[in-house]
Length: 497
Ligand code: BG6
Image (tube, rainbow, N blue to C red; front, side):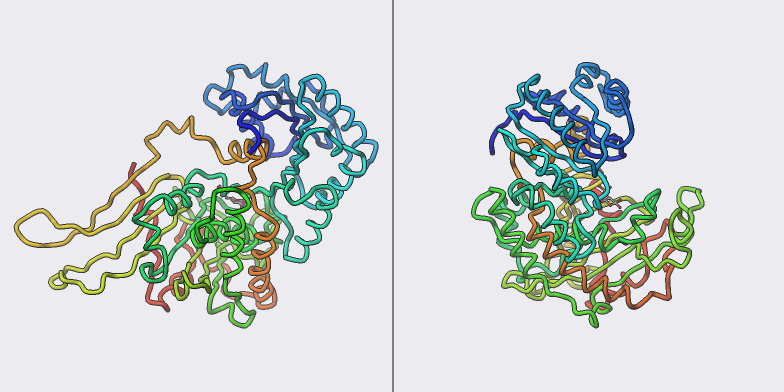
């Protein structure tokens, strides 16, 4: 890693958009407030005509929800400049180059440049090509491209996009964001595994029965109907966030914690995923779409009635699947994943279920031993719970389930960095560990493609098959029942912290 207090010019393409306002400006502000940046300036780039002053006002407004967001807001916003941009015009890039050069000199940024693409992916290729053609990337310092999802729509389209951006940036200079990799407890998966003698020896098919990864949302598709219709939960969540969590859970210990080593172990884990043939999809994956329902006394519309959604849409808003990893460590251990919108709770958690002990000495009247579980709570709770069995206090030998919990909830959350804050900082100091390498993206798309192809050819006549505000479709439970398993109710496994 280069520098613990980096300097650089951040150019945000899509600077008037939602992501810039909700996540990026506040994240840069937090880094600024904590004194983590040495010298920096930001150029907001977007189509809308705005003056620097108007843009700076937007930036200040975006800080209004942050604790202490008024402190030094003026000074912070004075680092922000605006360029009204036409994505396809060479002239516009030449002007941008000029602005970048001036800010470089004015702030002493050493020619370091981050190009952050927070906008519609159809322009990614054009922007990268123009950055190169107009010499914006000829700079004395580092040049890095930070790119948001969706990274393609299938393996083929992702490859095409990758080839375009590779004309201007090398793989080492491309930072593909998967914001789950910036989450505190997702980053903790590796630490829990690789720093505890009590877990790693058990982390294999001899001791683990199955692993369950759930990411459930209460929100519906909101204003993103147009995008979501072409995506669905499989492309929106499984291809990236869920497979990334699976890779972190399944990978071998890296030789050391450098970005190359960690990412190559994740690649190996993804390479071991057993592909699901098109005619076998129904044995491994199920889908759902939300119908009308209610939550908290509020009536909620069906997916098909959302804005910009086809009234007979076949897009899935829920996916559950069983993954098998064909290597020595994991042969025969199912990794179950599920994700969906408009479910009863917003919650992301991983449940590692250990195998039963060989013989239950306490078997008898009502004394069913619970399997040991390690639960990693990712959000909204952050923490770890270990579920064990112990003796119930009293004269008889009776067992009772107990839990050991560590919860981050009691820690002052204000100071816990947000995912984007960490990722932006990492991109500025050249640490790519928590960004996805092209090989990971390619393997994930290849895995997902056969499932989406099967689903596109075979419509699901049961849609909508779960009411908004519910636990999701019944078929998700059946998927596990076939294997003699069930979904652990993660809402009941909360840390309680
Ligand atoms: C995004 C998806 O990548 O992740 C959204 O496009 C989804 O559809 C979001 O809502 C979930 O993120 P989080 O951090 O709220 O779990």
